[in-house]
Figure 1 (cartoon, rainbow, N blue to C red):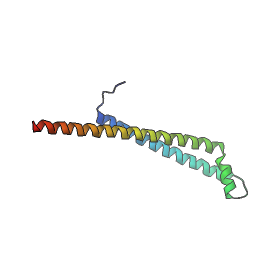
Figure 2 (cartoon, rainbow, N blue to C red):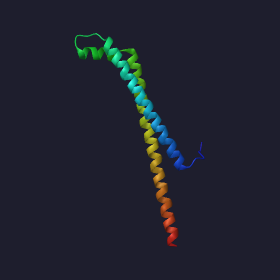
Figure 3 (cartoon, rainbow, N blue to C red):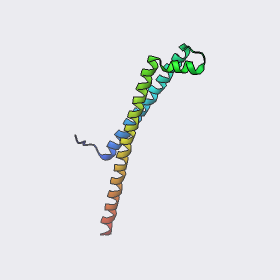
Figure 4 (cartoon, helix red, strand yellow):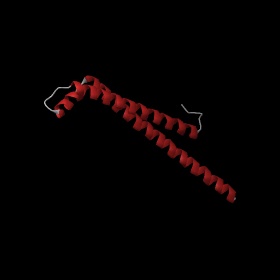
Length: 106
């Protein structure tokens, strides 16, 4: 479906969406780190490495880590979409500036 918003407005929307996705990814990553810390405190093992390995297998941590990873991937895609629109906008801006300059030369 075609948008009736200008290219500049679409760039703005895409940048805001990318920022929101990045913020959500950061929030979920912090949440996963908290779950890991909790799991690490509960973990048993002969040494620190073994306790860390056991903590990484905690179901709450695994679920939170998966969500954070998915959100990070979505943020990367949203940023790429916003970058693509910015390139399109700059191309349009350059083209219209050239057209205006050519009109003044006539």
